Figure (tube, rainbow, N blue to C red):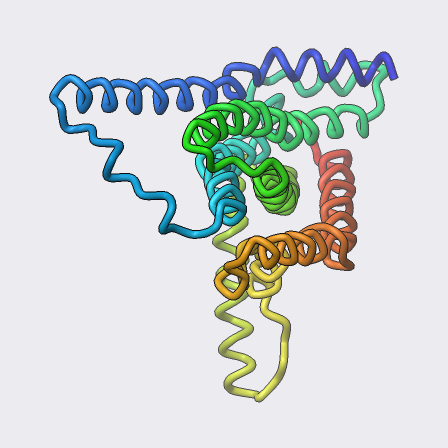
Length: 282
């Protein structure tokens, strides 16, 4: 276990600059918002009287939607940086000509790939959650000032949205990590191009021969598709939103699809490690 910890510390020092980038982007976003508000305030264009929350959706629904929406930016950044870190995870040492040195160390290959896998995916999860918690505090303090804060809906909105992005990141990161064991450069784009080619080939064969070959991209899109707000328009009352939240937990987390996603990701990690282990090092 100490060896794994040492390897993860090494990978942390290698990737920490990339992991910190979302923090700087978030800080820039908040700076832009503050400057915009200050500019509008001093020009006299800001009018809070125009905001009429009494005629809008119920408080519980506002909190649920808003706290899901605040995950959009950190969630998308998380997916982007997961791709960036995992697509070169198993090729970085080869490009730096230090692969033979690391292979000669008395460390399990599974520890090495596991550290890179965790740093690329779980590292970005941690960054996303830190930003999400900060956004949660800022946004809900504002909602509380306007007497529009509902703790139950707010927390569930943030947590459900976080889990959605984490599961999507797990699948995308595992696929990209697998491609990094095969391709030396731009693994994500090369792998996606091959999958796209297979998709069109299978579609042509199915159309010409009336076969039913499974379409890889269609299956993958179904595997990562999550919509926590689906059906929300039919639950406009506070009691309705609580019912929606209860069902959303089943849709997002407590189902067989989650188990399939975990097994699929684990299989991709194992396959990537096997390919990496048997790859010839020149």
